[in-house]
Image (cartoon, rainbow, N blue to C red; front, side, top):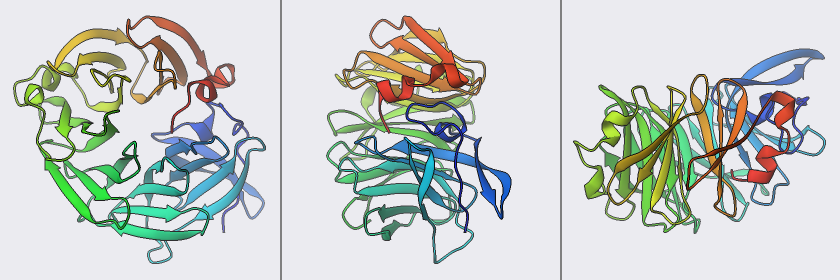
Length: 311
């Protein structure tokens, strides 16, 4: 069994444990230090626990105050399961995690048991997100499909087809009626907005929309504004792009990071956007105006994640 302690696991840390997308966490095996790649991280809704997942074949729960690993979850049916993106249910009772070749898995954290497995053929589920009311879960696959499951039993409700490459980001709109997905296609980045009930793409986001030409690489992160009329995307080119959802038009572009934008989070009051990237920096932006507010890196950015919030 693996047991570890991250030296930077304090609440709000932007060190290895609080990073994602190929960063590393630290621990010990048989008394010797080792590292593993972390590909997903998420705060519980009440901020009392932090979940991480990666290529060690386990999900780890951490006490953010002490930095101690307090629980390890693994797939007892398949020792080769690799966990990717993680997301907490709105009530903090369940944890969803995408995997390689083993679909979406949802775990009851209190009971320490797997609730259900949502099959998605032989693909990687890179990123996952719960609907705001906790009734559905969405996941993006390397097969270019977006999957929606019933959160109560894992029944697959929809399979959304349209991407021409891996789906690397998914996010629910605040109205629960729409969701956004981003990835990379044959011609570059792709960003789509979908009707979450019918599975149809929003008319303004059909083929020919400027969103299909906006990112030269892949769309690595996406976040909604609180009104549901604004969408912000981050790409592998380190740029942020602001989009008007009704029209599908890009209204603002900002240089944010050196390297891929790994995550975007909106503050609870809906006024501030936080971005983090491969350069180790966390940047804060005025969500509506796109103006840069503050920036930190490594230990200097402690507390930003805690203040901004999000999973």
